[in-house]
Amino acid sequence: MRDKTLDLQLSLERYKGESLNSIQYKDLDEMEKKLEISYRKVQARKLELMQQQLENLKRTEKMVEKQNEDMYNWLMNNEIYRRQQEAMTELKLVEERQLPPGVVNEFPFLLQDMPPPPIGGFLSLLPSHSNHRDPDCPGCNYK
Image (spheres, rainbow, N blue to C red):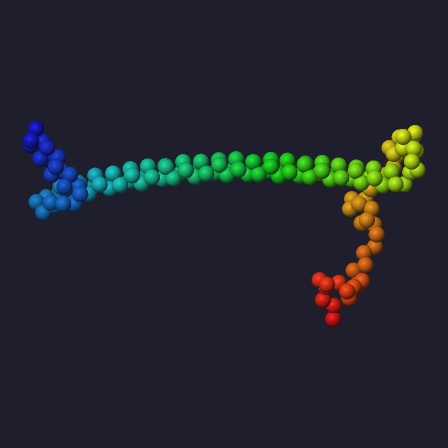
């Protein structure tokens, strides 16, 4: 048992690169080949693990992209719904101002034939006066 332990210890020292003075050329050559084979196995396993990590990252990337797309679609649908509700509210306010009181209650079908308001609201139809300059405007620098 003691001899076996000593042989293993000596063998381990040789593979670590220690106590190489007493080893013959043929034994060194054989040891080198074994080390090269072991090194290639380590490289192959390392490459395999890196490829698995890459595949996992690609799957994660696709899942995150899908979640982002779903979230974007959900937000856009909610924004469209909110804008439709605002447009309907604005349309009702405009219609109530244009029709005499009581007409809406007596003739609700009149509101169904009215065209929808412009996308930016009725104020967007008014001309903008970008050339108008107010010298009394505290935030404006006109010289």
